[in-house]
Length: 615
Image 1 (cartoon, one colour):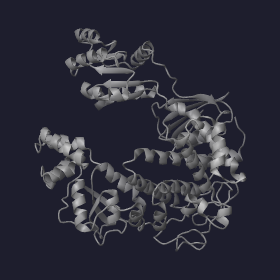
Image 2 (image 1 turned 180 degrees about the vertical axis):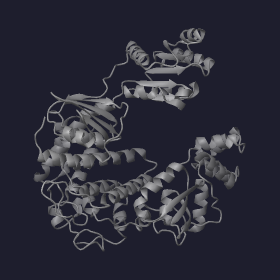
Image 3 (image 1 turned 120 degrees about the horizontal axis):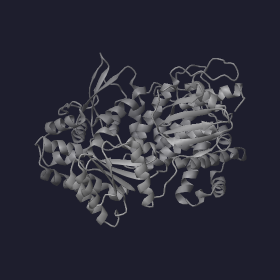
Image 4 (image 1 turned 60 degrees about the vertical axis):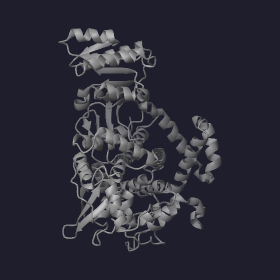
């Protein structure tokens, strides 16, 4: 959504409105619970064209007036239905069948990027070109095109699913493959060996035992695009409920970890992730009836409603999803129980109600919880530091090294914005630049030391070495110490640590250490990947040292001895003993690993099976 603060600043700077008039409109918007754009138009403060021009200046996208236009060009791709456009808060302007270009009005550049990403698997040969328009102008244009009103998720799914490359028909009841699929596309069990595996993509060529399955051409790209689109679709439904979205993401993460531990085949993992996202919708059954996939997701989402053989032998993906849901419900209702693994085991055993032969799955999930708690120390901050410096906003020179040392850092451009976040951020130490506005900084220091809530927070003033008198004034105003510009990193670290210790702030150890006997290398990588962590992992054995760089859950580089990249990672997977230490992200060397973490682990497991010797 367009940032209202940036829009207000542009309207004031361009002379279209005064700050006083904008404040009046903001009060109206809050009272009536409408957007700022709608309030501006409804009170005749500005025209559509002037408002659109302001949006264009803020976003960098061209403005195309929507007056007189109607959504859904009859020749446009069918997936851009009025229902889907309304759900995504966009407006299809025109479609050129010669160039296959669909022009779409959006509210900001971020929305354009999300739309392009989420619809990639539906677009076929089409391209998107974006312009910008205010939300109220899109709303008025949609009302002219057809009757409005908010549609349910089930109704929206119809327009969302029509253009799928799998077609809009139902799955073949015998195979679970889409109608019109190759006759040989039969369902077969996944790698876990459990009954009820997801239907597989079209059959693969025979391969020698123990070798990695070759990826089905286009399947991985298609499945990831489908998951991305469904994720975006569900998030749109809960755009006003961030806590609910966080809960769904947590459920997906646990399901992915379980899928890795149980060695699910890729098609089973995809079915589980899709089922987890779609099961969060209130009208999930309606969506499943209109949104066709070859995964038979109703068996994953509703295992207790199946009949016949599926009731006796439920899908293993459905059992995992039900187990994770039970745990999340238990944690919400009885958080104290979830602090004890034995009590958690007893409660889940009673409420999960799976057959006895599946109880090992419960033990696997409990081990996931124990391992995650062990690695959760990675998220603990060594302290909270507030930087007040306009140069830091532009150059970002101090925050990265402090973050790499484990500190939680926020940078603000001036003392006024810094005061606004003091209560929320509660810094343990403040770094403030004096040169830009010395009088305000001196007043800021005096106010902090005069307030009982912030009097104990150390203040380090960053000053020019050419003005010793200003340094003296800062110390008199309440600064605990000073740093001369340009700030020397090592001196910065030492002074930060010393002042935090003197202030009684608990010095927290960054990262975790342990042995590979406590947690295997593979399990550690799986947890870090599912949690989308940013860490550097150091490993030591009696005869070698290794290092793995992980960014946003992706393994991007590995080194052990003279080996680098994939070969180094596979060598580390064979280590069974040794120690490990995690650290916050340091400088990243040249990327040497370009495949997904799941592909790395699958190929590494194959190599370990063929060459079991370990360190």
